[in-house]
Length: 393
Ligand code: EPS
Image (cartoon, rainbow, N blue to C red; front, top):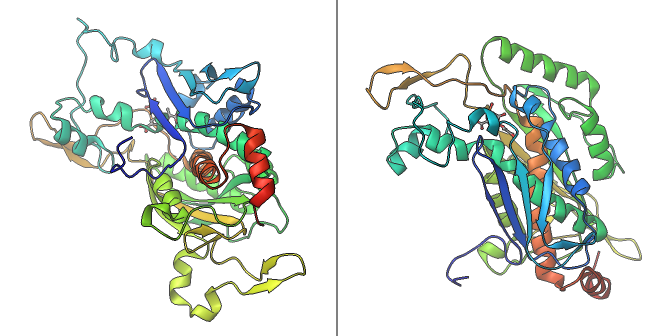
């Protein structure tokens, strides 16, 4: 790679391809060490989690996302070579003409009414298209399916090194779950609880209100956003570095998170609430328990000076409401310049629960990258030996 190209990932590389209503999704991840046990089932478990959630539209009834491993794994273990995945779109059979690779004689209606908040208008202006479909197919959150697929490989690696990543939904529209994550609940246990909830909220009273808010939005032809919380535990000191802007762990995590469709904000630890407090109330005091350093709080969210500090990493991510509205906003026809309502089609009212899984996935990718950067190793055994020899907790 050109050394002048700054990449927020240092040791692993991944790429996804695929249009929302094309044949399917393709993904490659490179840099995963050899000897990691991996099956299609591992990947499909996370894909199924991403498909859940109250407020999804008709599409998720059509798709049953299953990944095929095309390379990089032999007899159930990674080879250290690029791992490639393929996920078919079931919906493709309904779109084979509209999304045909070859020119088609069928008349395909162009989409000319850009949706405010979507990639539509900026995309057609940028590429010079007269059909918004050429933009919306790739800007669709369908693409995140493959990110979750590839990241599930990272999640497996993390679990083998004692790192767990979990999430929950803490806000949908204006309904907020103020309760903290119960003490001593591991991220995996948190996921078990959240996955049982249609909105991934672990507070039953709030869950009901969140579902009601989604129902109300649906009745109004509207959409709602929300906030997800992501947590990672079991990390050693020193992932990331304070020495350069792109080496800082929180800049790498933030870049990954802000790449998720409709994500508009990130808080690390106390986040924005810290801005209005004095330093004495924000910074986490240091203690010693005769074996290791302890902290009396975790307002830093597990990262100080751009490095992990062996505390849980805690993040909150804000997702805006989905821009496709059944009761559309005002727009302009890009063909005629007439004032008209924006394009509407089948859509989700709320995708916040699914977005929590995508946020977990992006964190898994960044954490594996940072782990490989610090400890290295061509095989899982080497990585674990390096960690056993030098990791401090
Ligand atoms: C999306 C629109 C909907 C969503 C889709 C994202 O799809 P469709 O246009 O086929 O109804 O369901 O999300 C997914 C397909 C997915 O897998 O998450 C959009 O426009 O972003």
